[in-house]
Structures are given as C-alpha cells and as structure tokens.
Amino acid sequence: MKIKSNYFILCEKAIKNERGLVSLINIFENINVEGIPTVHRDFTLAFNLSLKSVKKEKEVIIDIKIFDPEKSIIQKGKLPSKISGDSNIGIIVNVPDLLLSKFGEYKVVISHEEKEIDKLLFSVKKNE
Image 1 (cartoon, one colour):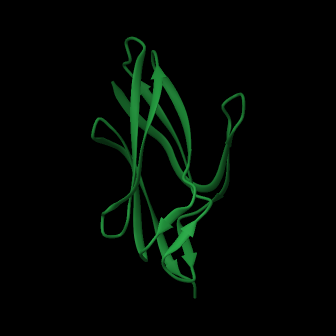
Image 2 (image 1 turned 90 degrees about the vertical axis):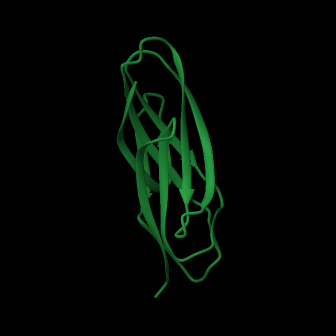
C-alpha cells in the first residue's frame, strides 16, 4: 500500500461538510505569546491522504506526534480508518488546550507503520 499526503495544514478550526468539503479557518505557522508556558486553545490539524494499491478492506492506523523544540513528544495519538480500494481520506484533528512550554520550532509528524507520511513545522515566539 502506498500513502501520499495531498495537504497537511495547521489552523484554528476546520469544518468538513456532508459532501466532504473542508473549510479551514485561520491558517498559521507561528504562535505569538506573552510568555511560556502557555496553552493554545484552538489548535487543529487538517490533512488529506491518498491511499493506493489497497486490494481489500483494511484498517489503516495513522499516527500523529507533536514534538517540542528539544525533540520531545508533547502529544501523540492514533487514528484508525477503514478503507477499501484506492481512496482519499480527509482527517481533521482538534488538539484542545495544547501546552507549549518552550519557545522555538515545533514539529508535527503523521506516519503509518513508522514511515513518515508528512510533517509540518510551527514556531512559538515571544510577542514583540
């Protein structure tokens, strides 16, 4: 099975309607804060994956990990999806009250069976 990321976006909110169309609200790459530690209340990951060479119905588990600037995992989760045949799956993950305890560059990685599918970077900076 081959998995390809079509997009991977960080935003405050994402909405998927009944037809599968996705609306993204307030896309960002930087989080500006007064001080550390801080909690980011509106942290949403939206991504779309193409899955190819799927012969029969199968459960696919996508892993998500968020790393701090020192490469420690601060949040992780697993997303199971049942698929059959070649498919596109759109996934929205809300991460409520994400604790950010360091300034610097954070990384979010999505993977399947320990193989990285995609990653995105965001920075936590002091307000100026």
